Structures are given as structure tokens and as C-alpha cells.
Image (cartoon, rainbow, N blue to C red):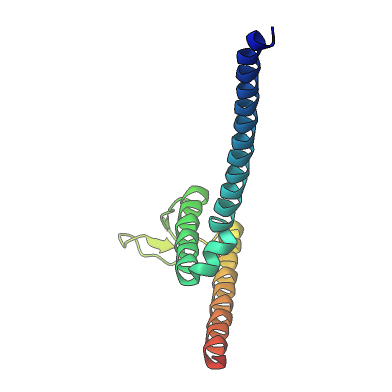
Length: 140
């Protein structure tokens, strides 16, 4: 009777070995997947990209800021034509009407101030980066 159960035992032991191998391989795949995810997050993190390509990042930020500013300016305050005043005081009959410039809106002034501050900040960042690069190269 022991001989009849030997093939079943060998099959069962083989099944157990295969299940163990499958679980080990599954853990290895999970471990590699976690490691790949961490590596990709490190490689594609904004801080790492700026560290590797500072000039390109600054240029891209600058261009994006200009485009965003123009889009916002177009949305917020569409182009206005100068107001034409007919019959202004001191105008002779039959002469051309005078064009009077309108004052910019407070929002437009605020956007201009923000833009100027962003340019100053960008300049300061660029100067700091150049100083750091110069210091790093002179130390070598």
C-alpha cells in the first residue's frame, strides 16, 4: 500500500514546491516593481529635473509665465480702443475728434506689478545659480 501512495506523495510534493516557487517569484516581482516605482519617482521628480537641467527649467518657466500672462491678460482685459470724445471743449467745428487714453484698470496694474516681481525673482534666482556654479568650479 505504500507503493500506491508514493506517486501521489511525489506529485503533492512537486505541487508544494511549485506553489512555493510561485510565491517567491511573486514576492520578487513585487519587490522589483516597488524599486522601479521609487526609481521612476526619483528620476521624474521636479526637484531632480531642475537639478539636472537648471537652465532649461528656468527658460521653460519663463516662457510658460509669459504665455500664461498673455492668456490671462487676454481673458481678463480684452483690448480696448481709445475713447473718442466728440465736441470736446476747445475743439473747432469740423476738426477731427480727439482721442483720450483710458487709465488701466486696478487689476491690470496689479498683474503688471506681479509680473515685475516675478522678473526680479527670476533674475535673483539666475544670479544665485550662476554664483553657485562659479563657486563650484573654482573649488575644483
